[in-house]
Length: 429
Ligand code: UDP
Image 1 (tube, helix red, strand yellow):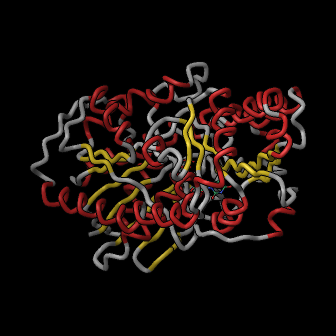
Image 2 (cartoon, protein in one colour; image 1 turned 30 degrees about the horizontal axis):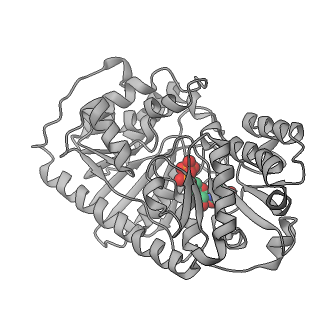
């Protein structure tokens, strides 16, 4: 089976944790690698050129390659400004397929922008289209009302993709239910497939040098945040919870340290990130300087040291489809404190591998921290936490389920009934 995967706005090999790079890159990289464990699978991932020095075809295994094509300026761009470059990218993708005489069995698109490109390819070459949204604008807007940052066409395009795709994959049962309620997706079209965790990358490892880098002492109680610095990720909730703890539980507060990993390169990207500036100002105002250490983004291969050094991972997101980070922390034996949303609320089992708190609610998080640190010794078994995480989540399993869906789509290619509602204004080619 030859798969045409489209990831227009992000390259699976970009630095992770920066603006716009995170879970989706990991998902593509890990899943595509796992899919190539099937000898008959070949994958091409098409992405836009973001750096004039990286425009070639890059093989990441004998069966899988990333193909860089022109689609807008050859530099990283805010993804909300990329819509206008879809026609150029689509034309280049089509030319590539003709020139190289490629013959694909299926189009697999990631995020709404790639979905629109995928739809064009689906029609031109009469292929089935499997789409995964990663995030949905209508769900995001429910929790982030004051942030009208999304492209005006996004919601319309996402609805349109629900109609024209042959299969919609989601990492979350809750998200799938919302798609059913809002867009009327049928049960034969929707498929919930959980992402995995790479147990070779995420395992417990003590490293004293990491303590020094985090400017922490042995006796500090470290809580760790890993991820993009973006309003939807809710880092501000942790800052406000720390301020509350300063007032209501000084002994605990004085032992706590919050370590932040992510946000891009520390010197170049962080200072230009609006949410980072807002958080820095809040830290200054609330006199929490020294309590919060920003390390910038780290390579995924280094993250296990930070997860292992922390007593708890905190994921305070306001919106999340799945959330890879809590599972990665658990694979390192570290419990996770997560906001009660999306799939995270089911992954975290209260008192066994973490606790949950109300999203966007600093007081609930402050109580959660107090509860966690007062119960810690009796509750946690790091090895059990790890074993459970790697048993329940593996990219091998994700690939198996995805591949079985792809095989079905190929078989049913012509007979799948999609309620096709053309929307010419969205068609990129
Ligand atoms: N990540 C990383 N380095 C960083 C920050 C994050 O490698 O400095 C990775 C992290 O391991 C995780 C992904 O980025 O796999 C973030 O995924 P998640 O689903 O938690 O959040 P998303 O970015 O999808 O909102």
